[in-house]
Image 1 (cartoon, helix red, strand yellow):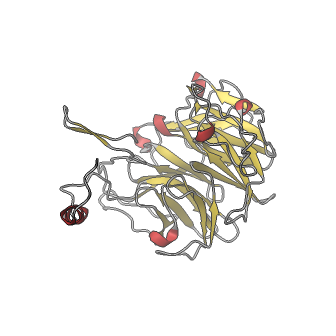
Image 2 (cartoon, helix red, strand yellow; image 1 turned 60 degrees about the vertical axis):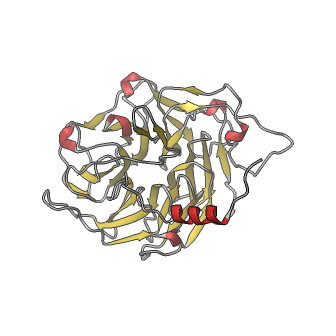
Length: 381
């Protein structure tokens, strides 16, 4: 039988709880996971997934090479904000509200006013499925689209949804082609939605006796054992009103596409182009919005001069003809002319840390193990 705890045990536990670490492995600087531009107010908004903050800068800020960093104009962060592993954002073009998606730990999407600053509560909080990643908003129809990576699904809410409001539509099923979806974008001109898929997927089975919440994704508890597989990365395209186990209109997939962990997406309505933050290839790919199959990109922005490293976020500023990239791998947000391609240096750079500072690139390191033979710390990221 287990030994009952003694007063001495409790004292030892209290001492351990107060023990300071010998050293810390972590990044003291902001890691940019998403970017949004507010040209009406001349600001750029960046997600700091490392410290669970939202940082706001002047749009024209440019960190000099010798400077440690550029200080933000203001930030949102702290226990009251309900920010955790914040990975995507949307800026309301009319009032500047900031929509922030939490991928893990706190299953919610939170909304702050443009004036929000410091450790403040969100104006609205919406309970969203675990593993929500990407966000896109259709202003004309007042709908908000969210991808759910673990469950290979897309949920659609009213734009002003909050609390325990249910999604109004759900896309999930074997025919959808969704496979670990991340970025999402809406094309209001053609009534299309584009979804970026990393490729891992499993089947889920419905339970007629426990149908669950309306339009809520079937989660990993409903996974069919042995059904998991890894597909090539893809961009799947659907009608805006698609729901259920809907087949895509088109699928961009194959070696010519150069897709490798496609993350955030952005649509250029004026030119009919789709921008892809291509995470593991350190590149930005541009496709025609009508692309299909194993289509080559129209343009590729890639190379050491671009300073692109693990691009997680992409945003277009059509007012100022600029392309913004949030780089998770080098403490930098970089900006280019909208039609930049090849190994083109950025027009401006906003850095959160010193030039060439080490980047641990820790995302969600859990659980951590220790290899006693090699004396190494193993971190699944």
